[in-house]
Length: 392
Ligand code: ATP
Ligand code: MG
Image (tube, rainbow, N blue to C red):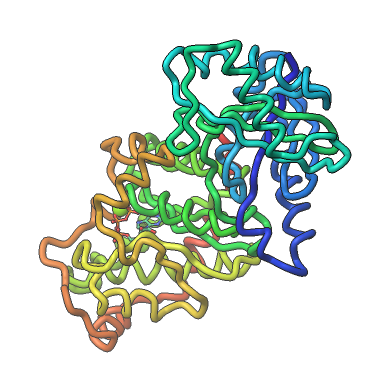
């Protein structure tokens, strides 16, 4: 039996004049995201995306890929048949036999987009419902609380039959490429991958920067960051990851500045270097994973001190979330298990025993005045390594 994937997209419908641009970006993203999975033919008609999988046995893989494409709200497999009531009934009986098991409460809902079809939607539902009940007499008709909602859609290209309960949730959000670009400060922790995913979900293309303290942090720690980027790339396609050597900066801070300011001074360097990379890569904002109050460096005054050194928006999408909520998200998007691998992060190696909790800009600036900030940034920048990370 011929099967097709039907996808719904959400918010972009609301975008008025921009709608066509959004739709064509989404269609391109679908083609790109499935390129390595199977050959497909994708069409968009009347706010529904039809994806025909042209290779046998690959439909589920394509569906799984589509659950990671921002902009798609839901996807369902459907059987395709000719536009006659007989064919629709036969198809429903055969295709949905595992859904219409004895004792199930069911109903039929129909949609007639092709107005040349002789029955209207109510008549289609009545006919198909009656037929299925005859064929499967142990079904129970229940229009209020059905367990199986049989959907019949008669459209331009054919008729489609599926069970609503089998519809799979998509990511929602906006298609990547509709919202310029931002640079994610990606550590090996739980938070920043989630932050990146949340901003990407709004249609923003992302690249990533990681600060790396060789030899204090190991090659495995770097691989962990690459792996996190490759998980995020499942949603965004390829990510450019910039690895910045950070050890010299950390050693200089440790040597010349008060220990309790160490974390904030490091964070200020990270922000400055990330901003420089952002500007070179035409990113319009930075993304970080802080949430208020989580640790000493995430009090409001600490955020003030950290963000003061850059002149572009700093997006902190986790700012009001609890750790538990962030962890749930991390599990959902698939980064959690990698994030909790025990390899050290560049900062854990240089964490002060008693970090300042309520820092003032002036105090931190005074500590920082012992350093040649521009030279340190230039040197770190000169050692940046670019890794192209593909979806895993
Ligand atoms: P995460 O779970 O993302 O590591 P965190 O709770 O450990 O966050 P901090 O160490 O205060 O928080 O770091 C705050 C943010 O700074 C991180 O979310 C991340 O965006 C950025 N950051 C921290 N360390 C690094 C690093 N080594 N490389 C890149 N970005 C970093
Ligand atoms: Mg961390």
